Length: 345
Image 1 (cartoon, one colour):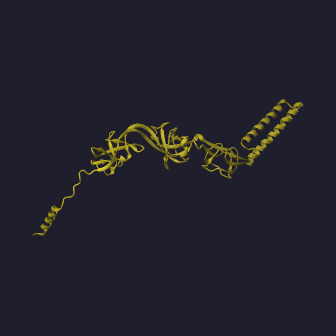
Image 2 (image 1 turned 135 degrees about the vertical axis):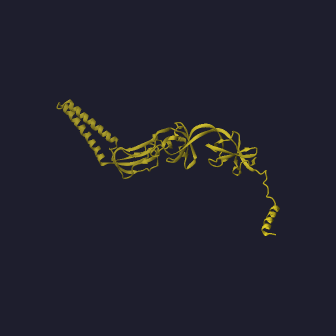
Image 3 (image 1 turned 30 degrees about the vertical axis):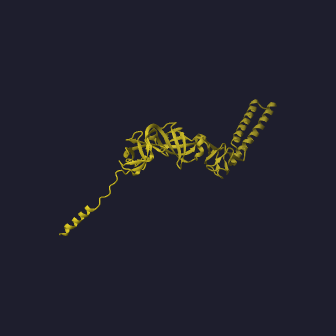
């Protein structure tokens, strides 16, 4: 026999004698958990990042009324202060102090001159107009002295105290610094009056207005949630951020949960509508291959969907679905289209 013919024939014989592969049981199925497609109100939301600042209507600017030397500074940036706490000690500048002393001398001189003119008038050696001029000079000198006293020039040094409870949000002076009159020393913000400054793209302003609901969360502490509403929508683009700023006040009852200067995320609720929703665990894949599995007669049918707004653990979906349909929420990663399934009791 020819060997080239015998070997293939032997292989064919062995293949015919081999047992058939085991058949897959037609009744195999996957154990799954399901949920019902619901119709509920959902919100179109707009996310905007920002920072927590003091309410600009509740910030007090503390200025120095006269030139001098900052001798002591008792506070630091970000420090809480109570009304009456010591803030700064300012030593009056020598030139400013001399100006007050000169004004004081001018009052003494004007008073003596008025008395002299009144005495001369009584002796008929001065006229009534001369007495009136002396009286006017005394009034002018007193007015100048009072103005300098109100600026604090009547003392060699002065301690400035906090006018209210708050937080030092800006400190522009330091110990040993010489300052001019009307220099802004610091800003003190009311601790219980905070506001979220959020930046929004100009093209997203269409559905946004004063009174729109906003949920504020801390970027680094998402568990903290504050419900509020838009108070102001600015009418120009911020040149630094290229965004439009909106202001959202923080309710006083929830201020203690947030820290001034924190980065925050605002979820702005633009509109409300009725939509189909499913648990987020039912959604598989990513766009454009987002899908879920719907139950039909004990089998899983793959349904392509588009997702929308999220509300808690639920997510808006659109596709070949109806209210009341059952969708797979657990075990769906093992499924293929048409596979038999068993639901958990």
